[in-house]
Each structure stands twice: as C-alpha cells, then as structure tokens.
Image (tube, rainbow over all chains, first blue to last red; front, side):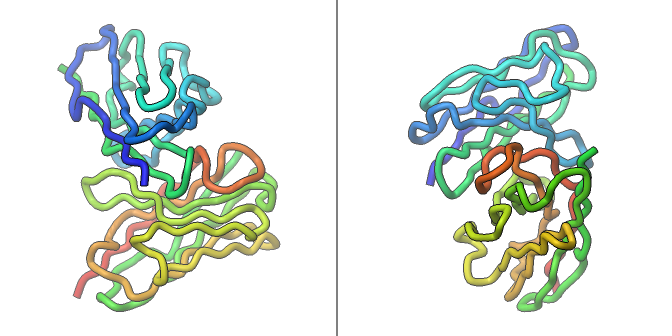
Length: 107
Length: 122
C-alpha cells in the first residue's frame, strides 16, 4: 500500500501570502496524484489532477508540481476562501490512498 | 450540472447492517466509475470501495473487505453500499464520488456528494 505523507500538518499564513504544501509518497506514483480542498462541513473538491493539471473552475492561483515521490501544491496569493484542509491522493495503484491532510489556517 | 445525493445513514448497533444509496443526475451514469470514501469525525479521508461503470471491476479497502458490498443500478442512476457486521470504527461520514474521467475505476474523484453520517454505537 502506498502511504502519502503531507507536510506540514498545519500551516498558518496571512491573506496575500504564498502557501506551499507538500505530499510525499512511500514509492513512486509517477504523476498519478491529485489534490483536494475541503472546507468545514463540506465535501472535498478536486483541485489538481495528474499532479499539475488544474480541475475545471479552479482559480489560476492554484498550481501543482512534482513527479515520482515528491509533490507540491502552491497557492500563489492566499485569499480568504482558501483557508481549508488540503488532501493529496494517489491513483497509481490500488488501494487508492489519501494523505492525512494539511490544515491551512489564517495567521 | 452533476449532482450526487447520499441517503441511508443513521445509528446502528455494532454487528448490524445498513444500506447507503447515492442518487446521481447530470451525467451518463453508466459511463463512469463511482466510489465510496469515508471520513471519521475529525479525521482524514479513507477510500472504501470503487466500481466501474458497467460493474465489472470492483475494489475494496482491506478494512471493509468481506463486510461491505458495492453495487449499482444503471437503470435507476443509483450507487449502493451494503454495510454488514458494522463496527464502532466504521463510524464516519460516507461520501459517494464520481470518477473524474469516463471509463475505468477509481482514479480522481469529482464531484462528491454531501455525505451521509453512519454512527455505529450501542
């Protein structure tokens, strides 16, 4: 089973700042990695697929990078609605697995 | 617009059974794999099960294998999760989610339903 480790667990930043979230896989997943955003009381929403492709309707301030075992989600300039929990997910092999999440909170 | 709506959650005693349903609209249901993902209170996401559009490919997490059964009725645009021998650790919000791309099983998931809460307690 592929284990995804996200860091940091919590990230405290201010609106307008740049956010960098990390996801590391226990073995290579090529670029078969997705990112999701979850706000309190809501279902997760797909942000990125294929490690760096932006899902429909996602603002341009979100970008993803990486391949193999190390991946990054970057939010170039934080807006109020971006403060949420972010999860990475691998679809490279079964079972599908998620990281434990990074909570992005307002500083 | 794609829409998914789960139902069937509730309180059940340990060892009991429950059947979740997910009604969908806004896309050709039979062309897309579907999945169930759960989230225990205050915890992260855990994949539970996936089924391909035609039902020929079925996958389960080890934690539910032998106890849960995923199924679908493409004529009714419905996805199901039959949960048997429920345990306290199965307590979670259960989400159904559509595969992002047509064809295949699992993969990236979008969109998701709003979830239904299953509580296993005596």
